[in-house]
Image 1 (cartoon, rainbow, N blue to C red):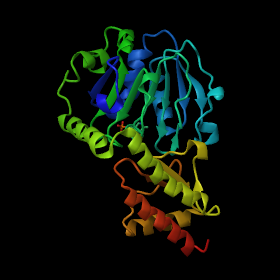
Image 2 (tube, rainbow, N blue to C red):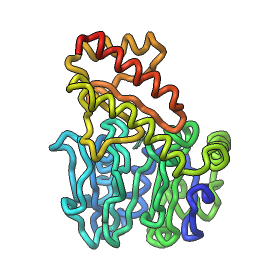
Image 3 (cartoon, rainbow, N blue to C red):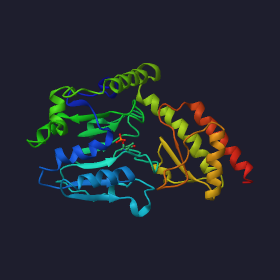
Image 4 (cartoon, protein in one colour):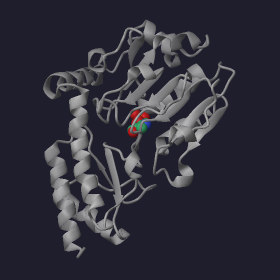
Length: 308
Ligand SMILES: *Cc1c(COP(=O)(O)O)cnc(C)c1O
């Protein structure tokens, strides 16, 4: 992991139980509870809103930007952020999985420690790790099986943790014990190692993976853009996700038919999350180019058949 991400020894890599959601709680328990100052949240979708909810149990949280009024269709521009230069940290979600909204680049948050939920685009593109105080990701989208969160934490953050936390919820304990304070989820960790080796040796690094992922996503977005409005993308073009392509059809009946016929054609799990509706094509690292080509062909044929 350190080699793949080019980590300096300023950073620690932890392998923890509890998926990304336990991080929603551990972050404010470690960095907000005792900080005596608020945390800033940039919320661009479902997961950021859930992370914010857990943080509110531990202290004061400010919304530096909220995408809800615009239905989580885009990421903010830097000048729209209402950041507090004295915040304990600023939290955001690099890729909102359900809405298919991804930051094209890191937001500029100044000197405040940036903490990022990268669960659904971790290892899909190069990461400027130096811009972050902490990165975390549930393994199960791009990195390995469920049962594990990968946490990359800048070591100076460990000095901010208040004493007296429950051991399992204290990043320092996990760091001091090299992620073996209790029995680690060995098999998921082993699988993540194989994934990092595949990315390094077979793919040739994260820039190469990014190029493949962009090519895959472009195939689908091109069809959406060239469909005369038959397919409507959910995300604003500049915030489109390369991992989760979300789009709607002209009617819910058409969407039902699309899902049914796609499934019959061997194209699975295309139904979008109920909060967004429509379709979501999740094309993580493990989805080969050929799989996306099949979906692209299916979309074209479905549109033609519908008389558009
Ligand atoms: C899937 C996902 C989560 C939740 O992950 P769990 O490991 O199931 O807790 C959190 N954030 C994002 C961005 C996700 O995609």
